[in-house]
Image (cartoon, rainbow, N blue to C red; front, side, top):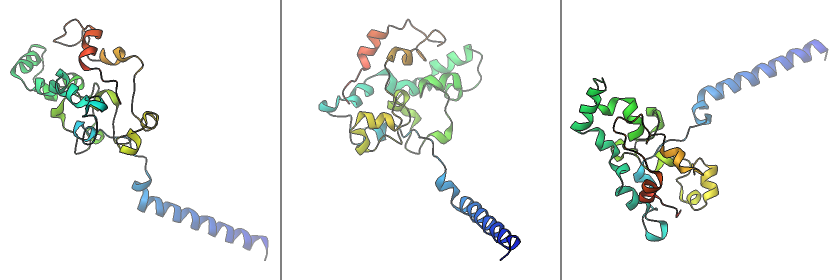
Amino acid sequence: MNIKVKMKNSYKKLFLIIFLSILIVFIYGSKFQFQEPKYVGVTKCVSACHKTESQGKQLDIWKNSQHSKAWKTLETEQSKKIAIEKGYKENPTEIIECVKCHLLGREIKPDELTSTFEKEEGVQCESCHGPGSEYMKMSIMKDKNKCIEHGMIVYDNIESLCIICHNESSPTYKPFEFETSWNKIKHYKP
């Protein structure tokens, strides 16, 4: 066989490989795409854990905190009045400056939330620990290092997280005393 025929066959094989690769990516591409972690909501976070004394009773700590009521606060007449005073025409539940601190501490993209995430639950587990879809499995949750590897956030400086929302830019700001506030919600047991 001469060199021209070999090269022609090589080009045909290369073209076929490229064509098949493109076809596979086109057909199955969505299955191969990297999925960003998603927020699953407090109900998923506590469905099997974080309730008992040995697990630190995180659910009770959260339920008894103002964080669990943060979204409901936005739905009150007082919040609507504050929004109007600040020059907004929308409901506080639609104002990003309000929503970000009454939910996740930052702006939210709807595609980051699963169907189990309920805004009405307010500032919840993932508001501090990041989206849980990748670390919520029991096999991962049993190992703190695995949780961190799968996206769970654990803060060395917790106060730096809190002051993202608890600061003077809040229209209802009251002096924030970190130690006092932290003692109301801390939950060290994994």
